[in-house]
Length: 201
Ligand code: GRF
Image 1 (spheres, helix red, strand yellow):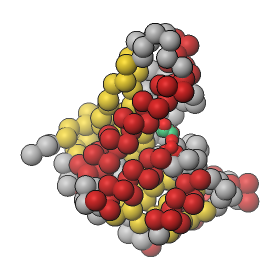
Image 2 (cartoon, rainbow, N blue to C red; image 1 turned 180 degrees about the vertical axis):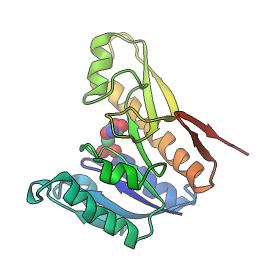
Image 3 (tube, helix red, strand yellow; image 1 turned 90 degrees about the vertical axis):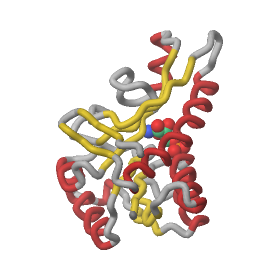
C-alpha cells in the first residue's frame, strides 16, 4: 500500500508517517512528498528519510488545474493508493478531488465542523472552548468539509497559550494520523455518503 504526503511546512506529521512506516506500524510505504514550498523544513525531512519529492512553485503555472494535472501524473506513475494531506496549505480543485475521491484525506487541528480554515487553534482559544482536538477527514471541494473519519479530543485548561495547545494537538495528530492510514492500508475504511465506518477486526 503506497501513500503520498502533501505538505507545505514543518512536516512533523510527515515525519510521524515516515517513522510509523519504518517501524512497520503503518502497513504502508511513504513513496512521495508533494510540496509547494521548496524551502520548507519538510523537504529536508524527506531528503533525510530518502523519500522522493515533487516540488513545485505555484506561481510558475497558469492555473491550479495545471499544477494539479502534473501532480496527478506523478501520483499515477508511482501507483499511489492514498493521498495524505499534512499541513498542505492550498485548496485543491476538482481535478485532484475527483480523481482521488475516496482516496484523499486531511488532518485538521480542531474538532470539525468547529473552527474550519486557517488558525483553528487561535479560533478555538478566542472562542473559549474547553475541549478542542484533531480531525481526520476525507477531502471534498470545500474547506475542511469532507466526511469525518476519526477525531481525538484535546482539553483546553485555563491559562493555556496557543503554543501549549498547539503542542498537545501535534502530539495527538502524531498518534492519530498513522493509525488512520493503517486502517486504509488494511482496507477497513468504508465511505457511504457522509458516513464513514471503520471495520476494526
Ligand atoms: C497540523 O497541525 C495539521 O493539522 C495542519 O497543519 C499542521 C501541520 O503541521 N493541517 P506539521 O507541518 O505536520 O508539523
